[in-house]
Amino acid sequence: MKSANVVRVITGVTVFGLIAFAVIWFFSPIWSAEPQVCPVCGGTVVAVEKVKDDVSKPSRNLDVWNRSSCGNPLFGPGSTICPHDSYAYSAFLEKWGLSLEDPKGFALEMDGRIRDLPLPDKGKIRSLVVYSQRIDIDVVVHSVLFWCDTDQRYLDRLDEYAKHAGISLKIERERIPGQTYVKAEVETKRKQNGTPNGLEGTWTVVAGEQSGVPDKSDIGSHWAFTADKIVMEPSHYRTEFSYHIDTSKKPAEIDLKKLTDPNFPPGAWIGIYTMDKDVLRICAVPVTVEKPEMDWPRPTTFQTKQGDWRFLWVMKRAKTVSAER
Image 1 (cartoon, one colour):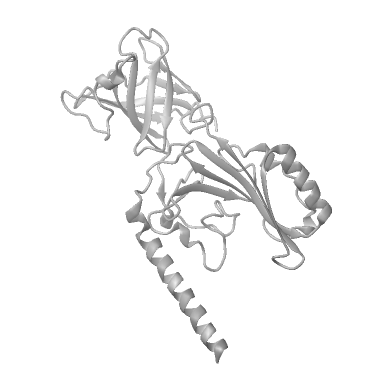
Image 2 (cartoon, helix red, strand yellow; image 1 turned 90 degrees about the vertical axis):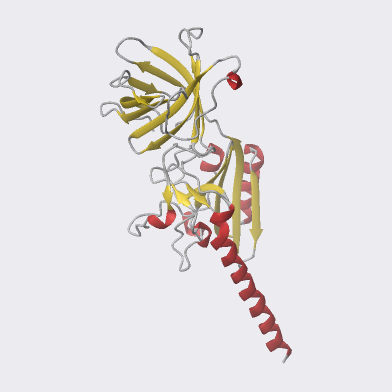
């Protein structure tokens, strides 16, 4: 009789927990705004529910498609994924992440200390070896996890490696008889510039607008992006800018500072940008380098109107030059 009551209590708690989880999952998109751009490449993201899992190939993101019978409810309504590099945003966790079996498959390079972590012999590994990255603005957490046969000599060697490499190591022995759970991770600072961001390459201006009026003066000019610099080459002059992006903002922000003739106005611009496959849009206003807060505010939409001093450029990626990815 007592055992039956225990079963009822456990069942009730389980059902209540599942209902609570479902409510949180359902309303999570209301609590957090859906990101519009990828924090890695700056490209436009799409809803996870609109992307199909190709089961004939390795999962493009094990966070989203872990191939289990229940799937992954953490990536329900409001969750998004980048179609270019597969980093996905969980509306429930409010985090970006990517998990793969291949440590070389990440657009942001996997930290070498995790990538080169010594693994057990193949015959002793009892699960997928999963490499992951979690992104939070300027921080990236790199990790690897797996199950293996309990082998004290291997675990001792792994412990020495972790101490020498300066990474954290979690080991759980015998949760499953004869097996050990291993997870290693390290946190690194993420550079907003100086690493591939999806903008690298040459773009050609195909349309323009200034203060609500179509502007053809820059059509045909080229903007060549490196990881931290832009070289603009219209037909009549050549200008270099340094730039900084912030993809955590919605829409993504871009700041430009002139390197050539910095005292010849405008010396700097603040704006927003969006990239959808091979189309790049930038909407920006000129500002004073010394006191940008005294000038026009940063645009919030990709529209201009009379008297707002906004410039809108629409560009297409040049066919002859590919981005450095």
